[in-house]
Amino acid sequence: MTITLGVHRSNPSLSYLSRLDYLDEELAKAGEEGRFHHYTDGTRTGALLADGTIDLGGTGSTPPITAQAAGHDLVYAAVSAPRPDHGALLVRADGPVRTVADLQGTAVVLGIGSWQTHLLAKALHGAGLSYRDSVTPLRPEGTEAERLREGAIGGWIAQGAELVEALRGGEVRVLIGTGEVISDRSVFFARRTFAVERPEVVAAVATALRRADRWVAEHLDEAAALAAADQGGTLADHREALARLPWQLEPVTDAFIAEQQEAADIFAEVGFIEKPVRVADAQLPELAAPVAAALEGN
Image (cartoon, rainbow, N blue to C red; front, side, top):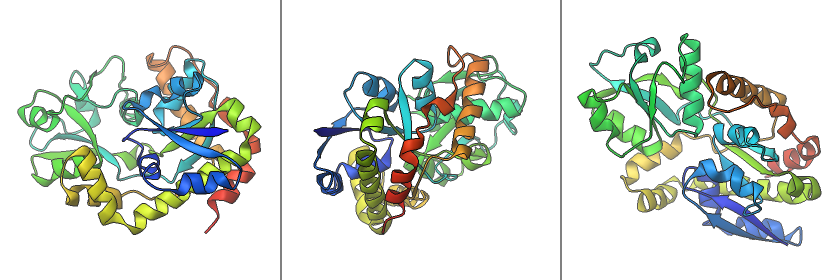
């Protein structure tokens, strides 16, 4: 059997794993082999799991919730440690937006459907505003820093190297850091049939991901060079962005499920998902022990 993992540049653990030999090494112990399916939009991960294109994928916190709401039968496999410095909601340094409440009536640029939706929706909710009614969410066009400086938009959620670059000039500032609002974990989830039938293979994938994360943490310069070549930007900016990430995976816990349920409830309230979901339905108890053992390895 060939195990297929979904890969897109927004999930660094899977992206780096696809460049290393760890997946085949770990799957060989279970008598399997692996392959990678590359795609550009992480919000498609749920659909790719549902149609059998991939067996396991990884995104931020929002796509598995929207996938559940769309009726896709998935289970959570593992999560990263919190990533408090991964991203931030930026505003013009000398502009009129001083608090989240000041975003009322403005446009905010973000990766709609990504973890950034979770960040913005919860931040607005906490300020008594609504993702649906209080702001105009816009997708990135590549000119966000300039538009923010010109006052064409009220806010911009940036992440990784683009965040490092944007803050360097001093013309924008952080309104809220990600860690002030959400844990912003990288989330790995799988097709239910695959996870139920082969929990030991899911654990093998978790081991491979753990090894890839360790490689990045120990080879930041090399990892940054790969990211810069693939995504553009400077090696220094990518290195700083990678150094801000925890590079540590954790089992799925009840606390994580509660985090996701809070997000799902907010999404349902503002109409970002069409119906409420019960996040705990995507928690598979049979995976807990083998994945935990895999993530405890040296």
